[in-house]
Length: 262
Image (cartoon, rainbow, N blue to C red; front, side, top):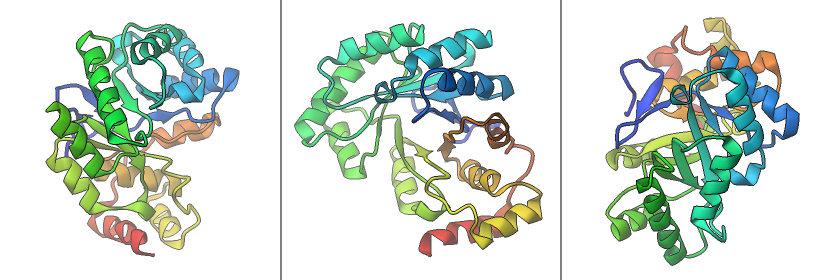
């Protein structure tokens, strides 16, 4: 497990710390996106996840500026599509839209259709990192074999793999294999991939005096998995961050882990 001593972040292999609860921005656009990200930053999030495909990097950047936070207080992730015509051009546009000199994490959004393209893209991204435009490089939606291919080709494993994750998709073998490689597991769509009315979730939430959504996120935290919930509703944005004041305990964690076998 890559958790830091604070329990609120995971340590990346090259030394950066990634907040364990981030704010996802998929399908958030325009003023809704700006307002949602600003709300997230106001209630304590310091990790924002976007992508060129989301077409909201400008709004994320505006919210970061409007928050009044210093750049070094934030952890910003964006992603590049595998068919981007220019790797350097893509990151430069992202940085201009985000109004920042660097991103903390840059991911390949989806694996390309062939491994040669994947290797070439990854090499170019590592070169961009070495120029200081990205602090860390990772992948999204990659299988372990695809990650091993990148590592063999370049001598350097990605620092993060972002994949769909929830108690219903719990795969301890995947988490173990990534951990053995020094790769942080980051889960997306934690609620979309869950059944928040499941009796097990509802019962545990009632026992702890929290919501089923908070149980799902706390489950991520106790497994050392980064989660990036998304919402545009101010109260839910705040509630999704309130997962550090309670713990689930071994019995509840076992009940939640078992949901993956249903």
